[in-house]
Length: 361
Image (cartoon, rainbow, N blue to C red):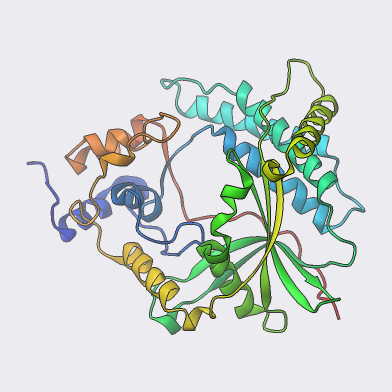
């Protein structure tokens, strides 16, 4: 059979439908607060967001953020029967080892992932969570309304097809001033002050506000508390205990904060919302309509072009979809997916929500 060039929407759609084992089926369209706007690379957007093609990566940054957020979520949910930081770290390490064994069994011909750095990244995330708790404990007067709560909001009222879906880190209520705050934590390799600069028009926070306010009209969000922690330049030594490593991290943060508070690696800022609600915010509505079109238009090579500017990331790593982009004949995509260790997401997933807490009276 002659190769299909697929330069029109219909031909690519037919080819995707014909892929075995559901590889070509599209995910249910949904807009996520952290990825709104024009995709950096439209072809990568097609592969990852529309089709759910995913290559398992061993990103140290993801491990740091994952355990950092989980430990804080457990702490905020209540202190009575919580596991220790050491046990959370052990659970993550066991899960990491399980994933490695599963990956090796499924892809014996591919290079085995190196996990030493990933284990150190887990220890770093645990140390960051403990350091954050020491420096910025939640004020006693704050009442917790939600921890890691997943939400969805239809966007039919602003003529956007897909809904917006996301998970908030923490929502608290200040009874003294009758204000509800969204608390968002970030781990970063950059200066916290620089990272917080666009806070007043952060699209992700504005959409979290729309999600929360649509389901909690009695507690509309007043603003965002941005908690940002820069990762330290020290790493866990061989055979060093988590307790000793955490102590070294704490001393590192203390030293940096005292030496120059204006460049502290720890930052917490309160930013009140000044933008209009979603349905009255023309700029945000326009951005969402643009995003919605990327999630719903018919797939084709022409409408989802490759962008070579994003083939290499800031760390010098090649895009995981490079082999697919180098292949101009989509008939051969399925073989590449199976040969190079891709998996197929059944649907976009979110962190498991911590059980809802009682609303303050």
